[in-house]
Amino acid sequence: MHKIAMLGTGLIGRFYTMSLLKYRGKDQIVVACASGIEEAQKFANEFGIPRFTGDLAEAIRDPEVDTVIVALPNFLHKKAVLLAAEAGKAVLCTKPLGLNGAEALEMLEAVEKAGVFHGYLEDLVYTPKTLKALESTQKGALGKVLWARSRETHAGPHSDWFWNKKLSGGGAIVDMGCHCIEIARSFIGKGNRPLEVTCWADTQVHPIDAEDHSVGLVRYDNGAIGQFEVSWTFRGGMDLRDEISGTEGTIWLNHWLRTGFELFTNVGQGGYVAEKAEGDTGWMFPVGDEIGSLGYVEMFLDMFNSMDKGVAPREDFYDGYVVNCIIDACYKAAETKRWEPVEIVNWRGGEGDHSSASTLVDYNEEYFLIKEEVMPSGSKKLILKHKVSGEISQTILY
Ligand SMILES: NC(=O)c1ccc[n+]([C@@H]2O[C@H](COP(=O)([O-])OP(=O)(O)OC[C@H]3O[C@@H](n4cnc5c(N)ncnc54)[C@H](O)[C@@H]3O)[C@@H](O)[C@H]2O)c1
Image (cartoon, rainbow, N blue to C red):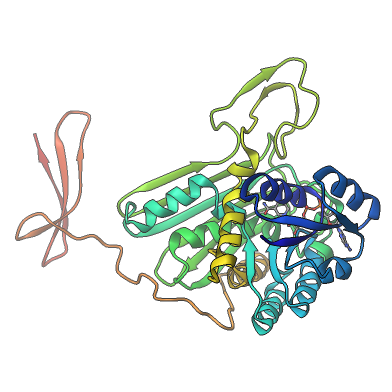
């Protein structure tokens, strides 16, 4: 059983608390911390948490606490993590790990030096659909993954600090690109080094300094491409989708909106429908198990089970650091409008899959088969490549 300090009782602190209390059930949040004492007290009362405070250091140093969960605005992650490392406590930090790669590296080095357990709370690689899709991919169902595309878009975040670049580290890229980048990296294989990125980013709608819309490409050393599409300008709710394609297969995942639960109401239901839902009348797309569908439940199972076994979780601070480095390169590329290198000072990747994606299929002694297709006429077309001359031709079988 772990005794937890929950730092931050806003949107994500609430989802984390609900996940911990409802599912693993073995762990106890013993202190809640928020910027205002009243907010902390209200939250503690609601969830039966014995202590509350407005002071981060007090919560972290609480003698009963062995695990610190950081659910604070981005600009406070580093401060909280360094205090937790100093206090010798296990620390689980929400995304993005740091405001940038340099901060994330400092945090990684601090937890490693202190020898404390560290987990990066990237819930979207833990959704039940994603876990199953990753398993199929790892078993070879897609062949070699060539392209992993991930999208997170909605009409913009719910608190002031997200919109202030100094406090958040940026706009939609740092807020949501971090999810998409880690999803793509998980499918492509974390042993493969992200080499360079190109990125478009703009401020299309909102009166802010940061980008509210961006599309980027991350090229890996095995030739695979990760693509992210993020927006704070998208209307109609939260759109979370992934598409993975490989030499032998394809996966499409739709995590939110239009996933099979559609409800029409003329009068509304009096309040919250689902995260980032834009209204509560007309056709709506509620989510049956919100914390399960977003991956929080499986994420905390992995975190605490790994902690108990003394092994690293699926996502740790090193992953958060790599993601921050990719994001840094994206911001640079958005400015220079060129491909920019991803600078990772201590790359620890394993062996990436450097095999060629080309699948040469013998047709006969003379030809390779490039493609075959049955045409609307019923005939079959074969596209062939001559093994010696390289010439490409077609044969039609009637
Ligand atoms: N899917 C996800 O993983 C996901 C989703 C949403 C947010 N987040 C991340 O979670 C973090 C928090 O986001 P949120 O949406 O919960 O924000 P929020 O604005 O809803 O809540 C922030 C919380 O931090 C507290 N806080 C602020 N300053 C503090 C201080 N000095 N001392 C103590 N408490 C302080 C506030 O009182 C509040 O409880 C961010 O890093 C965000 O990127 C992750």
